[in-house]
Amino acid sequence: MIFFYYIFAVIIYVIAVPFLLILSFCKEKYKVSLKSRFFLYKNLKQEQGDIYFHACSFGEIKSIVPLIKLFPTCKISTITQTGFNEALRHSKKVNFLPFEIFIPFWMKPCKVLIIFEAELWLMLVLMAKFYNAKVILLNARISDRSLKNYKRFSFFYRLIFKYIDVVFAQSQKDKERLERLGAKNVAAYKNIKAYIKQEQVKNYSKPKARVIIFASTHENEELLLLNEIKLEENDRLIIAPRHPERFGEVEGILKDFCQKNHYNMQKFSDFTLSENDFANFFKTKCLLLDTLGELESFYKISDVVFLCGSFVNNIGGHNPIEAARWNNVIISGKYYFNQESLYQEVDDLYICESVKDINDFLKQKLSQARVKEQNDLNEIILSIKEGLDARKSL
Image 1 (cartoon, one colour):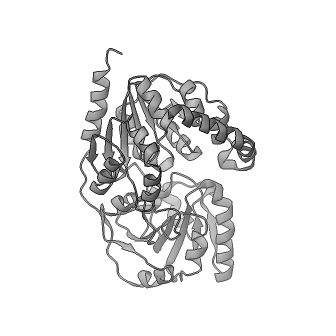
Image 2: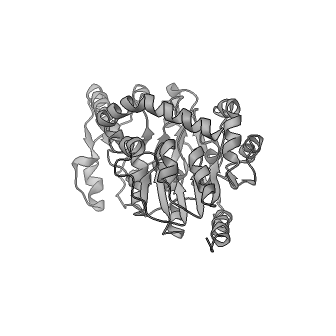
Image 3: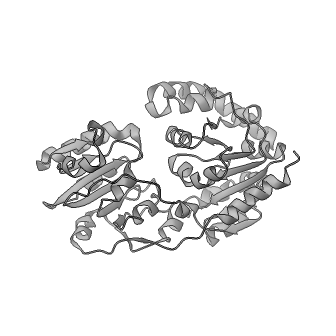
């Protein structure tokens, strides 16, 4: 079956190559990642490493930072440009994961491979086992929405799970679903995104105003929320798009909103300021946060966070833990199907069933969200060390 899968992947690649090449030149976010993944542009050289982490994007890479710091000689691969940039902050051994047909020739030996969430690439786990590595699937989940597809291709996932030694699932429900697909040695752990330790953030002075953040917004979400929200005189609004390639688009949307309502606005990237200058700087009604890595510093001075990716039905929500650490009121949309386990880790998180109700939430005196007490990552760390110890002589 593996032979036929590989031939099928080659055929798909040959058909898709012209489109991928055009896309790699047309869209900024794909200019490096697509060339690296599908044409191996500057992606042939790899450093040796006994431990190999693979995760998809920015949020997933950020989630495994505590493990990366414990094993600093590890190597990392990722899929997206934002994930690549975040990984480079913590390691020099970073690559884009190539398309399946290249992995057998590209991948170097390792002793432990840790893959994150849904990054179930057959050639990746197959080659890891070829090198006799221990394969760990971390933070595994099967959402209600994706369950049907997993069942439809259960024959394929059963093949992949033959090469995975240990699975840490996000919940008991995920554990049972994964086991039905053939996963073995499955532990119902928790979503490890809840275990991420708070990073050092900047100490911006809080304005004497109610600060509202639209956090990690996606396409159509800004318009959806801006068309409904009614800002009070003492409100300040911050919009933080999820993806940097949309900064320009969101700037135009916010400008239109401000002109219509006679508000002034600024872009964060237009200013160079010290942390203590922030109170004087933030006198505008609306601010576009168009710089990555600043959002948690803004959570620290905010009052209300609209956790986006949940007000449109094709994203599945985002991690509420970072915002909940800073004593904010958190309001989410109803489409958080990819983050159910993390939402359960936060008390007093409000779900807005209809975007038309957001002003009703803003008029109420709501409780601040609180993160439930967390355990540590010792069980995962032990599993990685066991894999290393068992392969010391290799």
